[in-house]
Image 1 (cartoon, rainbow, N blue to C red):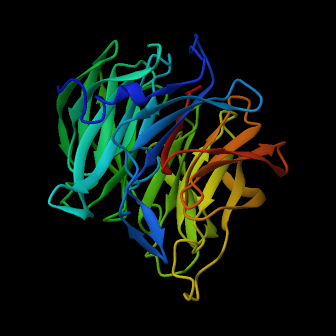
Image 2 (image 1 turned 90 degrees about the horizontal axis):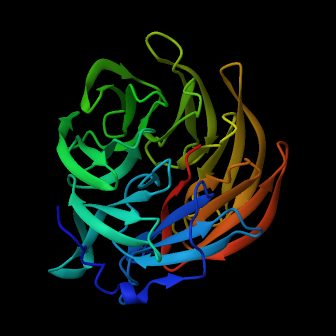
Length: 386
């Protein structure tokens, strides 16, 4: 374990706006990539990149407000599930899949960082950094707060960490394929006995068995759609949802529902959601799902697939079927979304605008509710688990 990351020295630059997080708050954490800029459809490193950072937002206030900002490693690469908050809100984990190449400031190279944020410190701060694997992306913490998993996109593995209090210890790796298998997102079932991992490189969803601190392949793989990417499991553990990114050729892509009550678990429904679904987020009510559809907003303006706005459809799970409820236009190159605890507010990350767009949700309609500006491109997100 390395204490104090390369970003922790300038913690004097951390901003705290009069908030001390008490027990069972309602938090959202946005990881912001300062080295990503969209230039006519090309992800480009700016000449003067901003430091990567994390923004902590208090959702218990109306309207939500920024409570703290910390400079620390973050990355656009990988699904937006690169942040995880412990259920007791004592700490959070943030991964960084990439960094600027020290030999060429206009290039990005793989990174393997996992940062630990002490959320109960005043102000919150990074207390440790650890090494996972190349392209450390999706991260998950079990409900008991004793185990964490990190999907390593660029080496085909999942890193396992044991947790004691706020201290993480490397406990090994699980190889899930070759270096191109692309482990992306990972999630534990609520009972902590299984975990699912999407592999967009070989269109596979791996089911892992968890026995205490021992994690191993279960021997069961699920196939939902072409290039499964983002992943979520319902609070009750009865279903999982994955977005299938397709080949990025401008075609409309899909989202699939996995029945976790079936033995063995299996895909039971797939629906079309639009071009390039970057992520999906299950509401705390365990029924509604917000989907981030990039919709060609990251393409050159002369592309026949370019659109000026992204899309955010909301679906409901009814009798193990995905049913569309409503939809709203969103900004460009949007990434992840988070719900407040009452499932009445959705916060959507949009990179080009460098902001988090908010929408009220009444179960039937979406209403714009303002924006929160962040520093850099918001690309990873998590809210307090239920």
